[in-house]
Length: 291
Image 1 (spheres, rainbow, N blue to C red):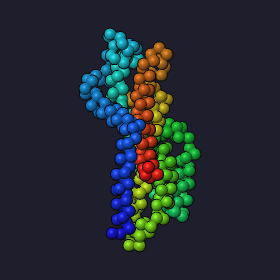
Image 2: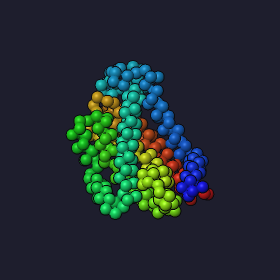
Image 3: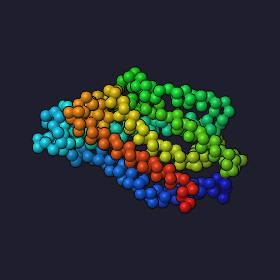
Image 4: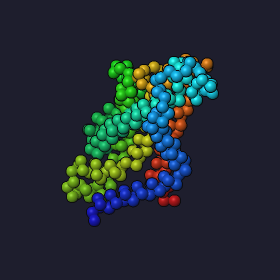
């Protein structure tokens, strides 16, 4: 068996060990259960609950517990807050997932090319990364959303474009570390192409920290979307947790539930993603897995 084959088998064995380590982490499993529950609620909840998030169902600012109001009350237009949380979760989670995928894709491309080839390409790509790092992320995202017209798609695009430098630096560091290992040199010696070495030999061994970073980026993107919506830069025609907070922020003292319950939804979602990320980080740590 070649050194490359041995390396791939080691990656598979490491993945099985990481899974066992993750399942032994109670906090990580709780986070996974929470996140799975939230995703399922946003997918099947609107059909089961049966109330349109855009429909006015009672008088505005009906408090929770009111006999004539929904369970969690109504907002400034008389819309069901619980229906908004259930339906708006789709938009929030979709923005977080798309933004994280875009961020990691750009970071993976830039970081892998920089770390593998080095020299002038590394210098040029790192200067580009530093340029994006010094830009005020929130201000840059606000400008992009304003120029492209506010929508869930442009918000996800803006978040992805401002958050990729961290992923690029992490990918570069992993490629710099792995490219000097013996099995990578063996792959070069047998005539493997650069593309094959990068995708089949280096990338599988560099993935663990990138998987952790992707999980944490989802939480960051959700908070970023909420921040943009709070500033009035979300899609006014689409309900999300951030837009619910942003639209009702002026009434927080007289109708606290219109902001508090969407805020709880964001809090528990980001908390679950953070617990999953921490669990993955521990699971992929060979020192902890060996104990």
